[in-house]
Amino acid sequence: MKKSSPKKLRYILFNKPYGVLCQFTDKEGTKTLGDYRPFPNDVYPAGRLDADSEGLVLLTNDGLLKHFLIEPRYQHPRTYLVQVEHSPTGEVINCLRAGVIIERRKTLPAEVQLLSQEPILPPRSVPIRSRKTVPTAWLKITLREGRNRQVKKMTSAVGHPTLRLVRIAIGPLTLGALKPGESRELSEKEVEKLRQFIHVQ
Image (cartoon, rainbow, N blue to C red; front, top):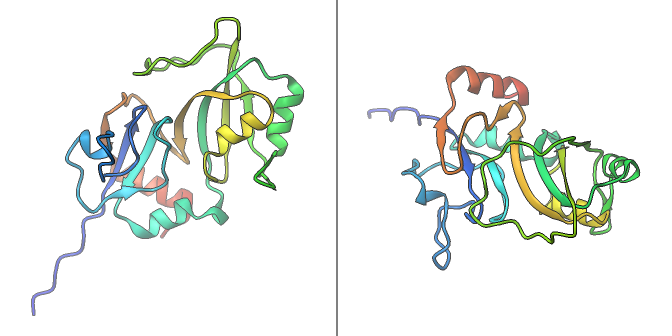
C-alpha cells in the first residue's frame, strides 16, 4: 500500500480588519476570514479576536503548535495597542499591571505602558465612537492569558472603556508591514523561531 505523503504544515499571518469574524463560516452576511483570500481549508485561527477588534491572527494546521500557543498554562504573551477614554493615572496603570478582578477572578500581572503619543495605525473602516469633550489615551498592554474580551473588561473595570483595540504581536510574531486584510506565509526561519519560543520540538 502506498503511504500518503505527510501533511504540509501551514503558518499564515493575517491582519484582521474591524468588523470581521475570526472564523470561516458566514453568519448572516457578516464578513469572515474567507472573504480575504482562499486560505487552505485545513487552517484555523490559533486564538481569536472579537469582530470589533483588529490586528494579528495566526492561522495554522499545526495542531501541536496551536495547542502550545493557546493553552493558558503556558502563558505566552500577546501585545495590544488600546485606545481608552480619558488618560489613566499612574495609580490606574499600576492597578492594571498588578491585576484587576473581572468575573470574580483576578487577572494575571500584565505589562502596561501609557504611550506619550498616538501610535501610527491605519484608519479604521468604521469611525471610532467619540465624544469631543472626552479625551482619550493609548496604552500598550501585554497579557499572558487569554480570557474572553479580557483587555476590554480590564480597562472598563478601572473606569477607562476601550474605544479601539489592535493586537500587534503574538509571542515573537508581529504585524510588521501587513495592512488590514493582508496576509502572508511565515518563513521557515520564523516558524523555527516560533517553535523555539513555545518549546515545540
